[in-house]
Image (tube, rainbow, N blue to C red; front, side, top):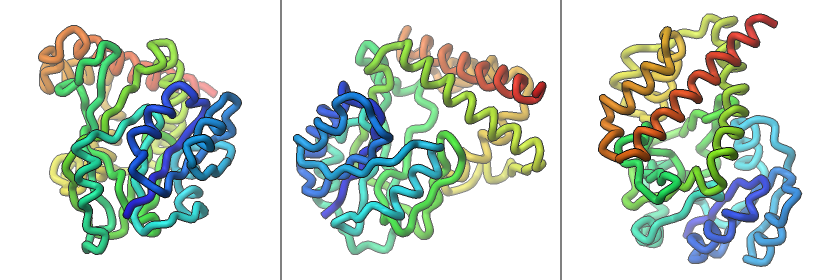
Length: 270
């Protein structure tokens, strides 16, 4: 069997659907960042166990949860409130061999646009380490944390469906402005410590998480990053095949990169 961990902060809108998609689990934990809406009440009504902690940054928050929450089972599926476990993934989880040699599994995520369109081509990072033994997983980075498994990694069938626009465009931009603050802080730290990134690992690492980490580190050093990202998403990844939603999403991601550029410059001036 598998435990489920859901991170929340004012998720009264999205949490019911998320909980419904994991109703097959008898050990659901909602790890809440002091919500002031009905998130906790909704979780309790569904029979979930509640753990509350003030959010500081992503890696510290996640690491604290894995170290302090008492799970019933040896394996944990970690999801966010705006994600849903697909029927295919439920089947894979219910048939999962909990005694295998791996310590973590990658799950493919499908991001959906505001109009319900699967951003199949525009989505940059499809695989995420979301099923793991909690004692064998830790996180680094303030935002978009790097997953560090202590052992072998496998890949699970099925999809984790993600609805990042469930609360509208305003919420998406507001949240990414917050992400930009943390990304800029990390960029400043990298500049101050002269952190080095590997082209070899960025291109050829078998570990997707490590490969992505070094790609981002090298990418931050490029001039004209927002334009490069837009061209990469629209032309190289062919986001145009996702229609207007794909091109719009690529443009929004380019704007997010520009947020990071502006915030980094602002911090450097200080």
